[in-house]
Amino acid sequence: MANQLLIKNTMADMRTLSAAEITGLQQKYIKASVKTVKNIESNYSLILLIQLLAMP
Image (cartoon, rainbow, N blue to C red; front, side):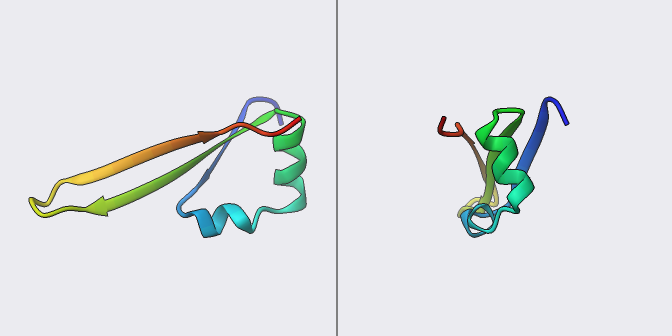
């Protein structure tokens, strides 16, 4: 399971991580990102990638 990337669409999804995902984050072999897509006035999309660091 080395160097896996965990991507969730919303912060609500991040709050419902499985036990395996939490363990991976704590042991730092999984990196996490939250991707949020928002439509704004001129039909552009704003994509925010927030990298979360697991606490030791």
